[in-house]
Image (cartoon, rainbow over all chains, first blue to last red; front, side, top):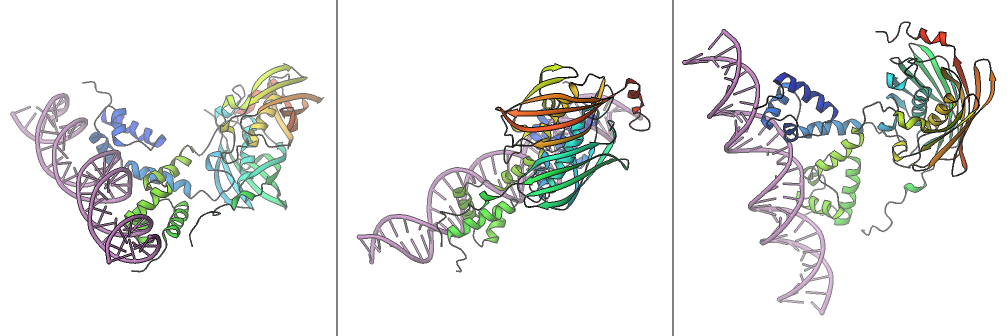
Length: 201
Length: 201
DNA sequence: CTAACGTTAATAGCTGCTATTAATAGAAGC
DNA sequence: GCTTCTATTAATAGCAGCTATTAACGTTAG
């Protein structure tokens, strides 16, 4: 019989695979790694990896705690949201990579930086839907692939449904970018409609 | 025996409860609502609510695609470059998709629109390296996933290595966005100094 | 040879279900 | 009254995806 992997190789692969896709049962993994479910189970035990259902739970619990932010879902935010005080301020970080940069120079493309600022600005607005109305951007210094960016946003003013948000992005404590954005929150007219025809009582 | 709720009341409560906390099994719900698990099951059937594991799955899948950092993909950024007269003007288009939009509203995220404008502005500059220095953005109307965008850029002024580029983006002949960008062209000497202390290797 | 290791198998039991059939109590209809 | 309907509960078989345990192999190292 063909030996696909050594035990160590297989376990490493399993770990890698599950970190990307935690939704596979032992049965499915067994097929993927061409071994028996029991082997997968033994591997999981040794690696301290919980069963599929518990893995799914972890993922689920993760994002259910993340609905602090109303207008954006987690996946829609560029960068990693560190802290948010809705309606006031927020912090996000972005680890820049080569993919985000011009090959020739290694300089990160400007729209990635804008995306970080814009996403963060929208995230801190306390509304179901928030859109960017206008913005003033200033790129202070070029950012090179590999640099870690820290974005801080603050609601500077609010007039009705218009928020003036200022964002400063630093790398190594040096400001590389700042922006002022007008974010517009949308009315929640459609929220009421719950129980018109619900019988009962 | 004490009748806690009518059927309709209980079902309404179950619906409410699960929308806040999808992690409860029928058994737990039965205790909460002081009835038998079977009753809960019947209620779920009537309401079309799936079992706990499937509910957890839904929550998990939601944010599972979250590798924390969602990168823009290259193809998504630039749009299609239709025509360029270096140093003068250019036209690019972008077919917007659901991926670019907020799930909830279908409105395309602002940074995609900026990316189109910014990329186009940079590509019409006749220089080896061009960087965005600052920008003034105005979002006129929300863009919905599926709309085709047409961006026109024009070099309005040039002062040394600074170019003032204006970009107008239309959908269906209606302007949805415009921007003025200062693009800075870099001399080729300056290209090297990127790797002073950072990223290295 | 034999002991250890790696793998697979078989078995019992668990949770949280689905699906089905049935029993029971209470109210409503004639 | 008796019947019928509704709501609830029960009991049963079966499923997926496990845990935990015991056991049986084959390969390899000493």
